Length: 213
Image (cartoon, rainbow, N blue to C red; front, side, top):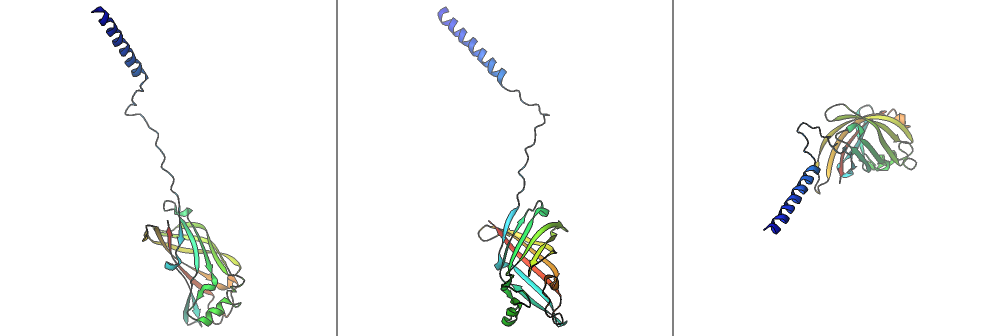
């Protein structure tokens, strides 16, 4: 009996020793009051939206013969809106306008506007707007300041911009909408033809629908 009892006791002693070593190596549980460093949430990234010109509009108007307002639009323009909902002041707007796409519902007048009396589209085919700063003015409104490059002249302008909505498109793309207004003096941009016929102040309206995949 002794020959079986001694090995059994030895194995039991070894097992107890191993358990003691494992217990000694196991980390003690942190007390309930211990502080655990917080893991920082990933920084928000601005989404870049591409302007959908089919569902966007760029309209201008000015007085005619000091009597009525004449309206026109540019049918071909493109651009992007880099928008960070958490930090809108860091957003950016970039718009390029193909000036020859001017449309006032009169073929003859449009040809005149494309010529040297007005836009001179052969020499200045593209007008551009690039934002510089964006300042929040309300819950969904901003003052967008930037440079308008038109007819070979660069001037700072301010656009009063409102976010009109956001959502999902038919294919799941993210959509965002804006509506902006501003006024410029056409003579400031070297377009001085017919001051006795046309007003100098030009009101601009831009309605944007843009999509991000």
